[in-house]
Length: 407
Image (tube, rainbow, N blue to C red; front, side, top):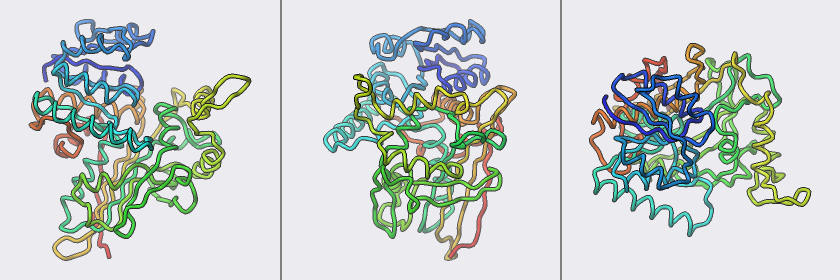
């Protein structure tokens, strides 16, 4: 792989992406753009001939566009609200881009705004295809690796009756020492937003909408016991399974389908109370005469406490499961793919950094190498399994498979 990569954002995932881009191929040059004061010092960890630091605020679209025009591919590792605008800038600049983010806002509840976003995404896709630009979105852990595993599992069945997908980022045994049994391995405000967005599942062949205030109710939660995780998970609905049923070509045929997030025991009961009490609301309230957004306050409060952060000697774990059930050659079959990963203390990167940041870097390499023939707006479903998992295996990120009788 030879090329010029523009990395937007040097947060947790950006740091892992930078490391992989620099160490995977000696001919790649990376320009890192971020507004953080420590940017230059962090970039100096790598050879100056390989990494250039550019202080820049992502809100400076003219500055971002100028850097894009000097790149062959952009790795966008910014907070979610920047994702779609950066995609537009990339198409205008005529440069490929990979992002781990959704372009649709999962929290948007206003039909007019949601429809406007859909139109903007469709326009972006057409413009990218016309300019022969690849915009690869949702290319992280969840979404990302889960969808690639899903496509792999579906290819093994003739008929698909059920599709269940799980994703989790949790403390490893030995780091489960706070009241939530949870520590932040990605943006605290991002976690809070994910706890306050609607979900859609398919039950009995019918699409069911789940309101955010009911996500953590006992009737929505089930347990999943995976011995490698050291404790059972509480799993609650997350995301729009109906949308993914359509992407997978299962619309109208699959009877049961859902995507779930997993947490350790007690987490869901706590957040059920918090959500119902308004702690994750997004409308400001007055506190001491000042407007305060409850969700932002909760994120800042938890993030400020060391007990909710990983110490240098503590490990996190990431988990993805795809569990598909149906028929093959007339027989009932259940196919399970599991990914379980743990922090690597040799590099210091958390498991969340590894599974998201390294995946982003891989997306950039696939684009630069010409391995992705398609142009336009792509999802992980456009990326074959054999291009992804063997490459991640060199980092020790591996998948196990089971095939069991079903029905």
